Amino acid sequence: MISIDPRAAAERLKGITKRTPLEYNHSLSEKYGCEVYLKREDLQVVRSYKLRGAFNLISQLPEDKIVNGVVCASAGNHAQGFALSCARLKIKGVVFMPQPTPKQKINQTKMFGGAFIDIVLTGDTFDDCQKEALKYTEMQQMTFVPPFDHPQIIEGQATVGLEILQDLPDVDAVIIPVGGGGLSAGTAMLL
Image (tube, rainbow, N blue to C red; front, side, top):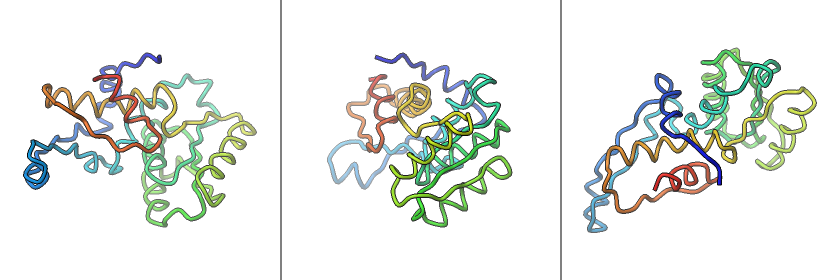
């Protein structure tokens, strides 16, 4: 089992991410006959919790791991969190995105990363894109920042669960969407 410290991650994320509200939803509560609260991660500057994991990992990399820059593969949300992290930390980053990525996601990623990132569109799927990103990372002697399967990514994303437990300590159930599993892994470690 990996060891994570969401409280330490929350300290690193101060001034980078927002502590998003846990809002009572009347309509869903009435529909399901219980109290339903929604964690409003859509209010983050990048509109996703992915910034929490990306910044947490990148901010802890030693100098020898960032000297040549960092690389990620993403279809959108991780790319945006990664790009903003690179800009805030003033680290060169390269974002690999699948060719069919919507223009809006590409433009948002460019906006958040500014001069600190380059975007490479390659492959038809995330898996194709990630394969190219990993090859590039090795060839350029850079550091790869995965979207979900790394202890520091999980630790940063676990701050969502930490905030839920701080705001609603007697919660009966937490329902989490699962893509790559970083958010659910981090939150499960707290429950």
